[in-house]
Amino acid sequence: MYKALIIDDVSLVRDAVKMLGQWDMFDITEIYEARNAQEALAVIQAEKPDLIITDMKMPVMDGTALLQYLEAEHVPGKVIVISGFSDFAYMRTAIKSGVVDYILKPIDPQDLNNAISSAIGQLEQAAGARPAAEEGNPTIRNVKAYIEENYHSDISLSELSDTFFISKEHLSRLFKKETGQNLFSYIMDRKLEEAKRLLTETGRTLDDIAFSLGFSNGNYFSKVFKKNTGMSPGSYRSSEESRK
Image (tube, rainbow, N blue to C red):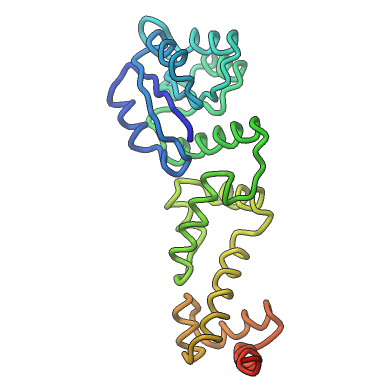
């Protein structure tokens, strides 16, 4: 479980970040707010947030001063900058401080969640966490849970991208990195696992099974099944029945 801190002098911006962030997906359970960097310091010292999302131009104490403090004090939290200014000086400060990303307002939800995903990934790597996907990256855990609920339909990469606010390319790379398996190979394996169960435990027709698993027709299902198992669905059903 992770903690996040959102720093911006405009309450509507803080609300937008809270609304757009897929916090549950990233296992972020506590979200704090601050109106400027000075207020943020007290929260950082007391709560030690894992993720800090900050504006750059703020009254009292701005983002530049905050980044300098975080760097000087070796604060371990990962930082994402959200700014209304594509100012080179701000960007240079952010890059020098090693921020995860520099996002311009108005905030794009995909950009925000991609940055959060990268930040959480860096935190896990820093902690020495390269576990199996079920225990590791929260994005992949949630993608796998979504697949488990929807593998009966024809799940597309665009659908997953839109659902989790992650670019198709980033999602494909992340899934392969975390699981060692191509995303659609994983989906197909889950479909075929269920197909084997239905062939063995029910008397449903091949067309019925095919449609129930999101295949366009029984012939296509049979080709995919044989390519992946070395047996036709009918042969598989017969072989399983002969074992009973």
